[in-house]
Length: 157
Image 1 (cartoon, helix red, strand yellow):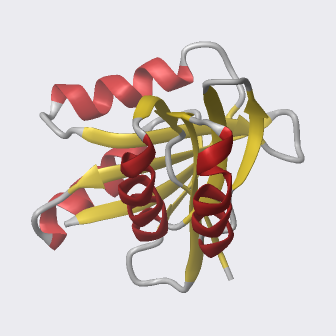
Image 2: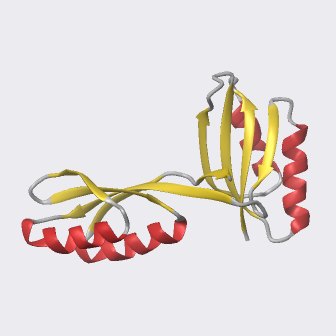
């Protein structure tokens, strides 16, 4: 099962490397990672999605994170009410004859065209993992040329 963990850390050189090293040394795979500064420029928030098959592994991960000097707080969103989102940019084949069908699909998923040329368009969408997956399936009909996706970010209610 995939778990989303938020880690607030001191915004210092090498912190990301130490946290990534903690995961790799124990054989845990990070499936998604997003890092940014917080309102306090002295801290950053890391949102990490990790595969943990049972509660013991998840507890081990949280304990190891809490032992690191630069870690301020660790929050596991697994059993908390939260919102999570991803951002995706998708370059697709695009012609004027596709305009109406594409607009209908984009409206369904609150996505938009951020740039287009005569033969391609770049689509932007933010949403939950399932919503993004469904949008990508719909965009396959237009021919996906390129895809880039952010890591998951999350915030408790």
